[in-house]
Image (tube, rainbow, N blue to C red; front, side, top):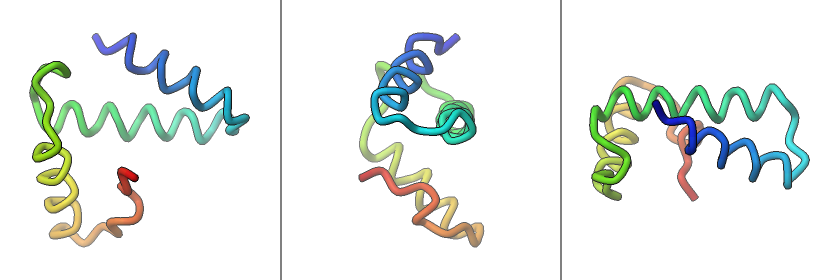
Length: 69
């Protein structure tokens, strides 16, 4: 469903010589976010990302895990 997004992640990660496991984790995290937010990619906003990060923090997750910078 989000094939283009994952290909872009993989391409950028490979340019940076990241390990395969790191690439898989990035794709997994993005997949989780997209399922969680439940919107089309074209409709995503910065507020969606902030809502996700806030929810994860309130669940007790380390916000650094989901750092968007």
